[in-house]
Length: 49
Image (cartoon, rainbow, N blue to C red; front, side, top):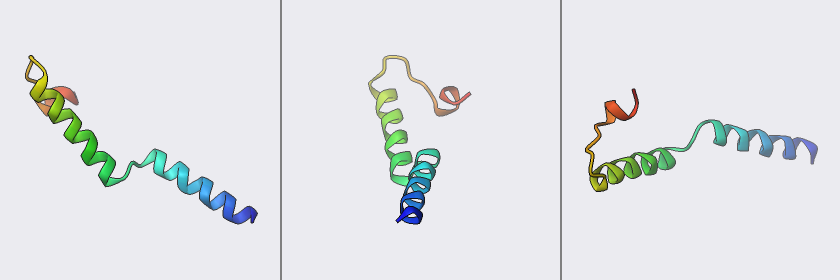
């Protein structure tokens, strides 16, 4: 039981450090949606500089 608990904890830590592809896609979609609705048009390379 202890090994199972430690394994689940380590997997949760890995998920926190490395977001899933779906979360990354959702983040990018939110960025593009924010850029669309924002009065100031921001390009991705300006956002991530």
